[in-house]
Length: 383
Image 1 (spheres, rainbow, N blue to C red):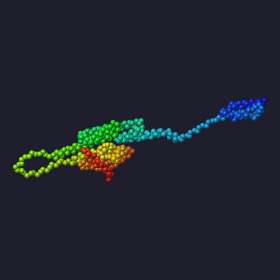
Image 2: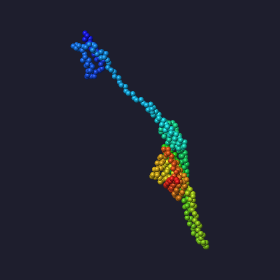
Image 3: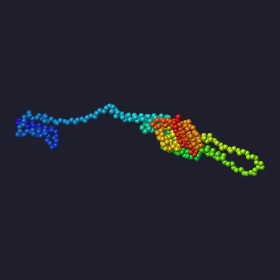
Image 4: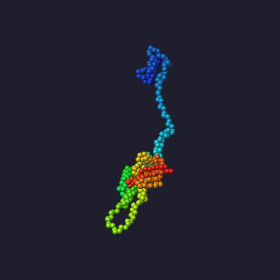
């Protein structure tokens, strides 16, 4: 009876262990189960005393629970790095606003000084940086209105110069010079239609200078033609006189009268030529200041090659040019003339540099039809 009770206790322990054991891998019998089966008593094998059997509480203990290991936390971000990451966009916005403010200030200063081209460039630069800036847009509008006003005033002066050239009959007396002025005016009006007011103003001034030169050259040509006509009348032979019978007594012939001298007015002709030459020099300096290569070649047709390329490069890199011929002296010798003086030349570059040169200048000109054009220009440093 004692053996039967021990066997029953062992069976109950085995059943409880089977119910609470973890799932076995398929195809294999767990070592504990085989061990328990080997320990099951049979009817022929005596069962050890109950004190020698493993306690049920130990056999029925649940398997240990596996706790997942948490992922390592990211390292903390330093305070200075986190602040920089948050303020990156803000610093970029501040830098953009500072650039807009600088360009706007430069545009206002240039406009106040009357340098509309420089003002327009600075204002458009500010507008390109921030197209939503209302102050910049208003400034661009004011500059455009000022440029339109300047263009309208220049057009009035151009019309007056053209009318004066027409009254002087420049279209017939100096057709080439009048045609050059006409082409320059057409180019100026094309620039107005396309909204290029700075270019239009420069071309309008150049066309007006060409018309004034055409007027002066036409008056010079008219005076020259009149002088030639008077000279031709002076040298015309008198009409033949009908022969008459000789008188009874022929007195000795009187000494021949001195031939009438042809009126000579060198001072007046030289003065007229000097006016025309001065007009050519004005067109030369105006072409430099407007950076207009076409107008420059109209008064200096021999400008070619490396010299033309050097002047064009200077035009391209300059924001503004001021040119003046000071202490000039004009010497006329028939169809040629020489002008000597000092050329004062100031260039404001696009990167903000200002270059000034004073050079002793000798300009040789020749009469081309009824106008004067530049043949050569030589520069020397003044002593």
